[in-house]
Image (cartoon, rainbow, N blue to C red; front, side):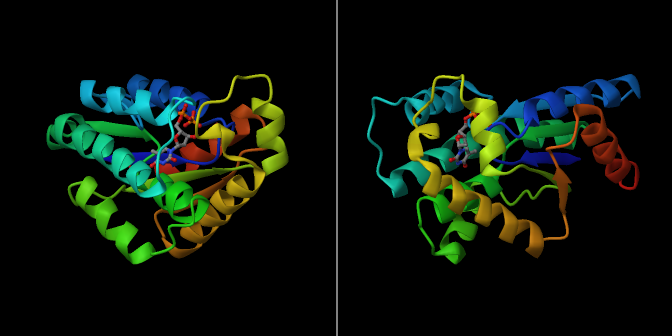
Amino acid sequence: MLITFEGIDGSGKSTQIELLKNRLTEAGKTVNVFREPGGTDVSELIRGMLLNPEIDIDPITEMLLFSSARSQLVAEKVLPAIDKGEIVILDRFYDSTTAYQGYGRELFDTEKITQINQLASHGKAPDITFYLKISLEDSINRTNHMSKDRMEQSGNEFFKRVISGFDELSANYDRFKIIDASKNIHDVHSEIMTHLKQLI
Ligand code: TYD
């Protein structure tokens, strides 16, 4: 089973993924967690380029680099784990490419992005996607103290477009569960578990 988490920076994905992983492991499941971009040697090297604030990257190159990192992760880690019947949780997947590169960078040809996403994911779609939704203001407040990577330096207008991308995606696909991530950690976790119990 493939479970993905999406949302803008500061939405609390990592915390929720950790809680979920522990809960599923206690229930006897084998759980693999990977972050995107990353999770393999190649993908971590690409991550270094993508997040480095010193490097200028053209938006199409950026989209292709995120997709390359994804393709390697899916081939090397995700598909083998799923074939063994294990659970894979991804901290971001191709919906981030649609939201950040498609909407954020205004590469609006969503049809083309969808095709590239399918290619990079080797045709594998998530079984369920949790969209941890917070406002731009909450995101700024939660991430203000951190040093900003190349993506995080993209400015408020960029992030408004990213949010509208996630909003549109989550309205269009049934696999999306929209979670109000401004709530406290335990309420968010319970809501996630309620959705998952219907699936597992
Ligand atoms: P990361 O530190 O993992 O951020 P977060 O903890 O918020 O997930 O950095 C990943 C950054 O890359 C994040 O700003 C979102 C961005 N991103 C894209 O722009 N497109 C993508 O396809 C993916 C997977 C991530």
